[in-house]
Length: 433
Image (tube, rainbow, N blue to C red; front, top):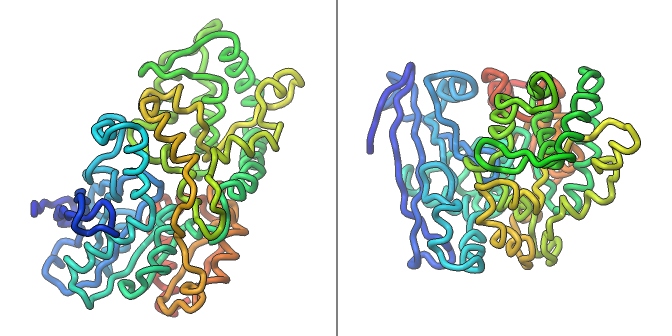
């Protein structure tokens, strides 16, 4: 196990063989990578473990650069394990380069059906037993989608947990993908309107870019198509604390003198829109809401279907009526698998997953109602990505769960708060608040 040092920390690499299908433990194995982080001088201390579950789906765990932010606060009390959830980071990869080796699109879709929260939790339990022993418990910190995974953990393997912290990640236990997006579009609209109120000149700047994209084909440096709808997807950044400012600075430099989009603008846009570094985020995004007991029907490209109920997001209508163009948020659309080169080879796979029915349940409401694991959660009142009403309903459905409801931070408050969010949750768990 390679070990190395950064300022204030000691890091150790771990690799684990886990079953692709935990229902068939003797079958095909894949590899899951995790990075252990401990404070310098405490390498040999008997510290409790804290498992970190990253947001996503499909995002690798953070790459630390020393002792800072929430990690620095965690290291005051814990030995931290940063898990690259299956298919991400240094775990066995799942992307346009590796998935074709599985066979045709149907075989690839069957493979990816094992990459949801239920499998991630079973991976974590296998890892816990290997690192800590059968009877030792650990704590878990779930950010965003990591919080969804934490609810799955509390549902099906609570015996492995001593406590749980959730930040911006209390999912609706019985919300379908359609429910999620029907609630999401109005939230996104409010964020866009707030952005335009802050930067009124961006109303016409966005309209100018969209008109330009409607009149001609524009390619990004990597070959992807920048359509008007793809440009709208930049609204996804409005759910972060600095996202509105980042978007404004991006838009104000869109054009060169004349009627040509600048290379610098296009390069930045590509960085925001490409899924090359996290293709599973797009491929699996709606499947994280599939549960057979809630709805046996397929998720069915719910974001695209529900969009028709909100004509304010129609680019052409906005241009024709000289209204502000609404941007979109955390929505995945079928056309993304034609405009993004990182996703194009996975278009049929994504469609098969969108049409897949009978997804296994991810949550057990009965178990959560009798939960005995201490759970504390930060709920961000103005969260663009996770519906506050769903979060509060779930908080009420999990026995003993305590919430901190705040509008001091946006969805990425764990990362941006310098450790203050985690510190408050730890103090809540200890009964100090």
